[in-house]
Length: 317
Image (cartoon, rainbow, N blue to C red; front, top):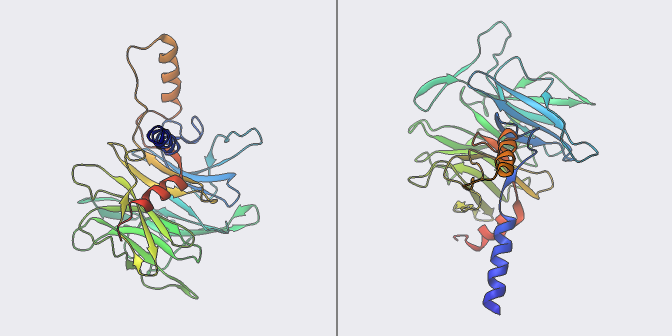
């Protein structure tokens, strides 16, 4: 009986850690969708949608019917290559990535990563004014250490986490810039991210007690999601989130829900198709593909608490 109960508990735990597509047909809609940033209410979300030629930040709102609205271009986006919004914990401002220049009459900013010259990225901040947004302004050099700075995440005290290439290896590495009275202290690399492997897309808890990020540190795999905990001794050893979350393809761009109950991330995965299929199954699968479950980079969600509990059980001290 104990063995049976243990098996049932394991199955229930696995079910609670199985990701599902977030808002299919509206937010996950068949394009490259990523990096949801929720306001504190959880009822407004900003996220990135991109193609090989453009990237914009969109906004969607949760209706009284429980459905997310068809997204619109955010008022501060659309003119340049904008992506990866991050919301402050109080909802007072957003930080996002853009290749926009300092002046409108200047060319867009280029970056250099993965051995190539590509669209650049620097971190910009836009403040909320009532129901609208102000004019974005470029964050200082302590944060924008180059023209290749991506994936901001904002801690509760305003400190910023982000990724930029390591000067020696060229691989992306994770950094933190402490918020101070006049802006930010100089950015410091996180100790578990040493530049020997690719680490991307930090998502830090408001109290900085843990951080979820993507990494290629497991040989033979693409980007997987990891969690790392911090205590009085500092940051620990990163722990992979396991095969319930990580797929054979790329899993990246993690984001935390404002209430701490959900983990959102972008993935190339799609649900497996079972053959042979009935026509009803084929129609269902076609609708699913049109709604975002199609192998493109779309947004998925999974309950966060079971993942953290499971990771802590496997924590290396």
